[in-house]
Image 1 (tube, rainbow, N blue to C red):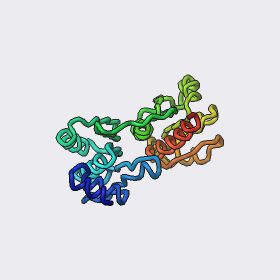
Image 2 (tube, rainbow, N blue to C red):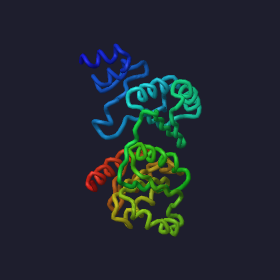
Image 3 (cartoon, helix red, strand yellow):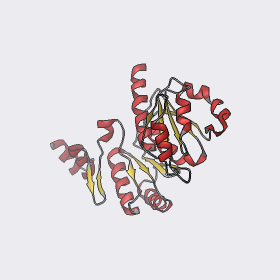
Image 4 (cartoon, helix red, strand yellow):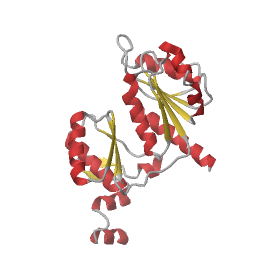
Length: 252
């Protein structure tokens, strides 16, 4: 405790960093950021931008950067990103900003990226599934895993799925995102001995086009796979990271 107080007094530790050390989280006007989640769960807290003002998004990103040297944001709108980018340009001019559709990953120069000896394969049925796959990929890359991405291999033309079969089999864990009837994850899971995480996507139209048909299809799969909620790219990425980390530990 005394060391923390002395560090705050001499300026080597900010009040937010001290609060994170003491409580595991830091409190601001926009809410509480769980700075200790990465140590506790192996996955950092992601800042869900949807439903928040640009000012709240910036404040939470600031809390993440100050306490963990990186920030992972999901469902970021164009206007939120523009405001965040303007703020970071001034406050963290040397920060690296990686934008993948609606997912943003920011890291300062002080952040030391981890490395995992494991490959996460990510596949999408169609281009429309891309933003959800981007969310999963950002989580995996943040953890230091190698990501092998294959897009637009839906089963409407099964040959394009089978063309990628060897890549699927080489991955340590697979995330497969698909909308409509959600067939791609179940087909892939029947062809590989790799753990498959299926992500139903809210793409399609008419009855079940909001992702419910895809979710039902994955839940009823006769091939063995895990299923996350509709559009839950972050959750799929987090589960893949936990598996990849266990594989990395076993290899060590």
